[in-house]
Length: 139
Ligand code: ATP
Ligand code: MG
Image 1 (cartoon, helix red, strand yellow):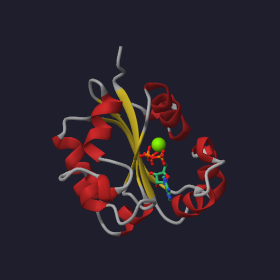
Image 2: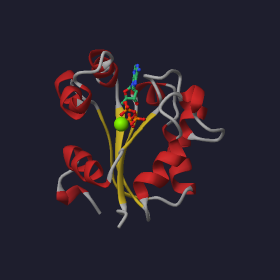
Image 3: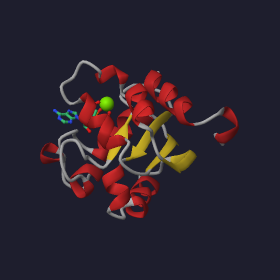
């Protein structure tokens, strides 16, 4: 059965470019419930840990440098079939391939600086939410 939770980050460039409000608006309009949310910043070491599945990839160090370059918004979202529904709302990893009207199509500036993160499985949604939030911070 599909899960109800996913995890997202608004990435540093989208925060710097003033898109927090617009992206949260799209999340609300798509009827996700916000379970937890904070403005925070990853150190390089925390970014390495978060993206450790990609540690063998050629873009890993650049990605960790980028993700620790400025403030991010981290949030746990809830909706039926949340992982798939949210990945549909954000669009393809590469904004050149993202469908019209998706978050990445509207707000990404490059493949790396692609506006938002979205979990890729129910299992990772829980792991990633727990990476940022304690039980007492999820409502
Ligand atoms: P995310 O995990 O951030 O939601 P995704 O699941 O769509 O994105 P992944 O394959 O998990 O894509 O890649 C993680 C992130 O690494 C991407 O969102 C992007 O920021 C960066 N990335 C992926 N592929 C490349 C690449 N070829 N060059 C540079 N950066 C990349
Ligand atoms: Mg991913």
